[in-house]
Image 1 (spheres, rainbow, N blue to C red):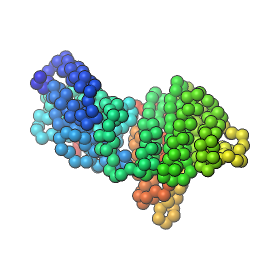
Image 2: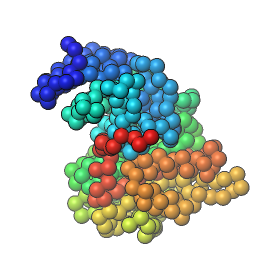
Image 3: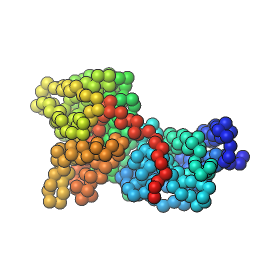
Image 4: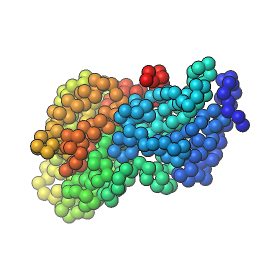
Length: 420
């Protein structure tokens, strides 16, 4: 079938339906390595040419091309593809011929940013037809879903995303982490884990069940694989407690008991376990010897959620009754859970990042109006810069936004052609 270039909306819609159906049929028996080529081949009836999928690397500094037309690695900062990734927006640029246009489209699974898709499409009356632009965005959405689905069956996507070797401890941690971003109406959750290739003891988790968001950040004692083992048991116990529908007291008790039984008091973890009622904004939490969460409102730090800390999880002595804190959030509030590796990151001269500096950074990002996961990406790089590229401890953060309408900025947006 030839490209649909000068068709009416109905003909292009029919071609798009066939394109999507053919791709879905082709992926039943496909390998992960086949995806990029299949996406490119199946798109041609819509006039889409030179399709390339790029995946973001673990350090979130570059976009790595998969199989397809030869393309260089793209830096996120300073490239049009990177701008599409950062802003979740579709950008246009000139192509090799005047009757063609190049598009940069974010690869987003739900609201999880995976990379970008580059395509070349035909123009009609000097513009990309609006319906074709929509089909390209939907095709990128389908590609993102296929990347997530097929990643369980091979290592092609993992290998593409790695720009340096990953430690066994980090391998374990990334296997257990949830997606870095989730959003639904009235809620955004975004996390970051650094150093991404050697992380050991830090981890986070979340789940949204009915009208409750379950949130947790943990910091396991030690470094490397030993700490990763403690973190893995801690996360597994937390999920088990959550799926037993235990309250916060019960969750603390179960995790504590499992760690004491498994490690005989020789290993422990600090952490914050929280529940947010999505209907009324009531945040309840338990602090097990961990840094207090921060609350930002209107771009300003308004509160550190101080609470009598409970004994770290897995410590067999000094137990006291578990304290459960409560805070009524206001629409638009942001809550940050983090590990001490964030605020204790130091320069060579010994200068700490500090909670105050962390709050100031988040305030500046809020003023910039960037999507929530971009705030976390920039925080990741700010911590690394502060520590001159070498962290001495893991640094993990989980940012939660309630009724801020920020989830809308994370959906693919169409913007005007790049003025350059």
